[in-house]
Image (cartoon, rainbow, N blue to C red; front, side, top):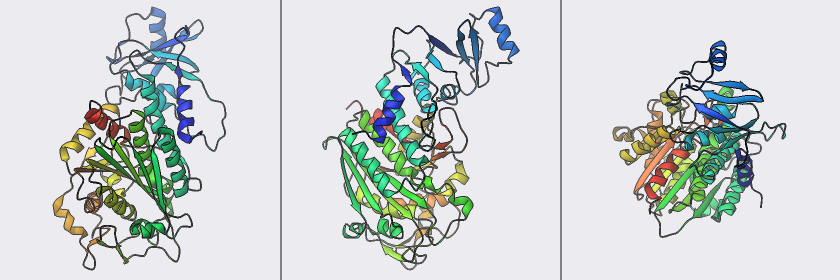
Length: 468
């Protein structure tokens, strides 16, 4: 069966030149030291001087030859700061076959960046002409590993970029089932009013106003005797804000409010593709936060899966509600790790901007380790505290807990503390408040949807469990 994920893998495979006998490979020289190579001819040095190429800056220069481009020089600017800097090359070089010159440290970084930078969301533009820029895989780099990683990221990007008319809870379910089929995982779904029967009332309450029924999507994969890793994603396929309706200028990107579920599916694809020795469980709380006569109201008090009564202070703080039920379900299994990913708060963007998601954990050393790993691979995050003195701010006078605090201060921390109330038995709980979007193209990260932190979590898990 052809799935979105399998099609993406085929597209990425075509980006790499597998013909070892090919002689038309144009070398790419990354000038990590910021100096021009000694082997340049006087004519080439004159050419670079005439084009004002600065080897210490970002950017690249094409060295002309008798048959077109002879070689590519990539400036040092940003090389240390961005392991994905080579992703800017795959998006801009002329058609042809290329290969990185020898001596590159961590050659898997530019190889992955090549694939990530080549991404274009084409669903509504037809096939169109595709420029063929192929890369000879650097020596010692496993092409399957690169394809696995890139395909997972492309999948997450495609899901986020797809508008809500074509990416609702049902389409998230379809994608999840396709991914499960590809990797031989189990997939089950609790849909509509069955959520009430299965004691997932908050997911139902958030999604009941939409004609597209809410659901809890679950994938299970791996040996049951291995460490339990559960990943939970917010799948709000469109967020109007509910009866606390968002203004128009903040609603136009709300197709990306399922970015947490996209990141979770990307992470799951990485884990299964690498065959990590873990017992993986994926939980996606999928719903639309819509407006209708039966919509969730400010002031409502709802019983959650754990029995805690949640007072609704604002219907636009709905993501933490669906996650609360999903996290409670995840916690019942007493896993070694629960990771949640969600486009949860604007406060996180005010604090850290679009590129740097905050990470909260019951184990601060774990958050710091993931953040350090993310910095090394160009998928950053920043550890933030589950600041216990703020926890009382979400106490409710009428129920057990409110879904918002009394002021806009510390909004991202308050949201993380709310989620933490629903996790009691997991050994470690770690939450990422992602943006899920790149406002302006960066090397290896085209503008648009981005499954932030998925690669960083995967690399951490690979380091923790791959030697088992």
